[in-house]
Length: 166
Image (cartoon, rainbow, N blue to C red; front, side):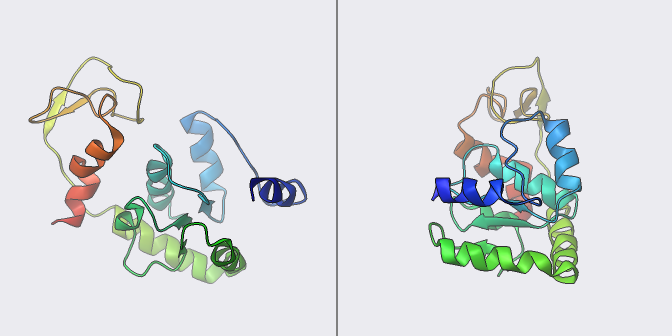
């Protein structure tokens, strides 16, 4: 499947496989995109990327796995069943509907920008995971920064999850 995806990307003027870039470059690319797509198992950093896209009002296409759907409105139109690439193709076909994409982008932005809060302290930079404040933020009751924590542990306590439980 990856080879097929690379062939499709190589023949397209509108799809970029960007690889590894720093956060500022990624943010600029997201701002100019119709949607952000994660078509595989979610790895660390990808949920954050999708949340960043939501903050910018850019829709995301992602597999329903790993709990990422909790960061999006219920019955989200652009998620797909993991490894169901026909379902993924169907989601790609929706990228031509600019009005729908704008509506979904605004819904995502509203959903992700509700107030979430976590208490903690600022430390010296520690850890290699995450981005933003993750290397310097130690949540109350913990001795590690978010960047030092196991990603799943971080997801269970960070401010985004607190939104879901309000």
